[in-house]
Amino acid sequence: MLLERTIRQLDIGPLPPARAQELGQLGYMQWLGALPGGAEYRGEARRAHAMAAPLIHRSPALGVFCDLLSLSMTVPPGPLPLCLPVLRRRGGARARRAAR
Image (cartoon, rainbow, N blue to C red):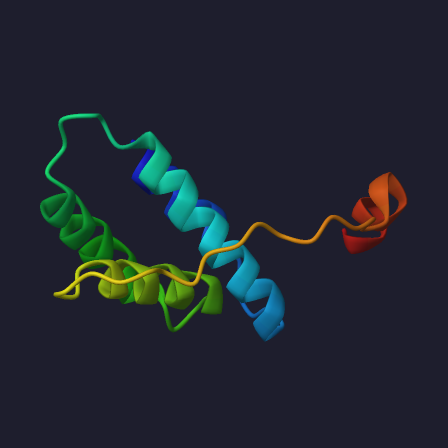
């Protein structure tokens, strides 16, 4: 259920590369944090990749999400390029209204 929500949140169309990277990383962390404790990681990652991969042509953020899933399944495992977004003002309510 949360996987579908994460995919919907990331499937927002074209984005600047930096923003797509930021959102894709956040989506991966959201998905990872929602996995049950006893879940088999590789199976869950394959399932997530299979659901998201057909949509990457519409959203670069989903491409980043899929890339992170693929990287996380490599053998031997290595560190993933994850970081939290830089805190900054994004315009608040005025920017949201202008975007409509």
